[in-house]
Length: 487
Image 1 (tube, rainbow, N blue to C red):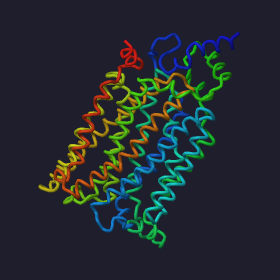
Image 2: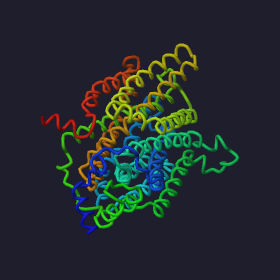
Image 3: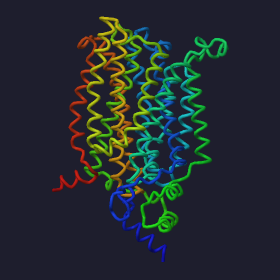
Image 4: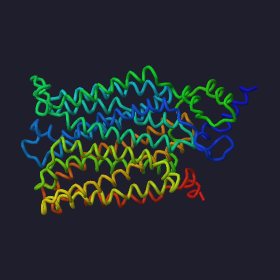
């Protein structure tokens, strides 16, 4: 009798009520406790990717120069550095949707393990590469095997409900920020260890492979996380019961629903997912991802470029410290302020304000160079850079906001992986285009002295202003936009 009740209750809610409301249709007032153990393991997975990807940023421009790819032309470094940074996202765009669909059928855990393995292997190869082709192949391996980001979002959606989703999704930018702290710090401080720590790293190997140490540490961390996933991460069928993922009438019916309903069913047809409302959310996510990645590839390029050529002429160690400082501030800000701000102002307002902050961020770049070039007042330079990174902290809230839109719009749990896969494929495509485009515009602006070498920033400001119209089309809540368009 109890089994029948549980089954009918599951069908009545169509797997969607946990994402939107409690069992009686009212919004939950008291947040459901998060399954801390499972979510912390998932956050370790979220930490691996930024550490592995961001650790190369402080030294990638120097590495390109060392390999003499540009023939000694410092102004052309941006072309090749941007290409290397874009290849990960280009190959990820080809495979991330397939990995997300597979996770809907066989489970999230096996896909996460493949992704972590690929990440560990590729970053190790990157540190051992002595040719441009080797760098290219290692980045392609990372992107092709790594569908983790979409799978993580799906699993996080399964581990949370409407009452605690803001708390859960606020953790992802915290982990990303922590990775953005540790990654550049590792890459900046541990590259060329023979120069910095000659007593410990005096062997010829470290002179031959001066960038292997940060890559090796990132790879070792990925191996540790791989082992933790193998032994401790549960699939959502088990973790869901522990976290009260399903807002059913009582614990007994929730347990029976989870125990006797297959979690991973046949794939949901794409045509049922591509509604105008969901397309709006995915497009906003894609545009946000493109503008954000352009900002983050321009930042280390700007910092490393000589002052007379439009940058600040900083060393990899200083670049790593500066980007790590951003990560620390960002993680603290997201931890303490994102969920209260969502509760106070709503997802749409927070997304629009956060996205608009990209305009002053890009405007500060040329101002900083002008101050450094004309006055040499470094306290003014670093004060402006501090304001820029403070605004970048605010922009990160836009990601958590739009991901909440995407997750809560899923028609059922069986479609969660596919929907996040579509969103991540879109983000990967634009992130593949973004770094190469932004760094190429940077190099082209310098070589041809367009707008004094600052044309790239004007272009990015224009793109941000034009695409803000898409942000203004977002509804307050999922479903409102589609209802208005039908009316």
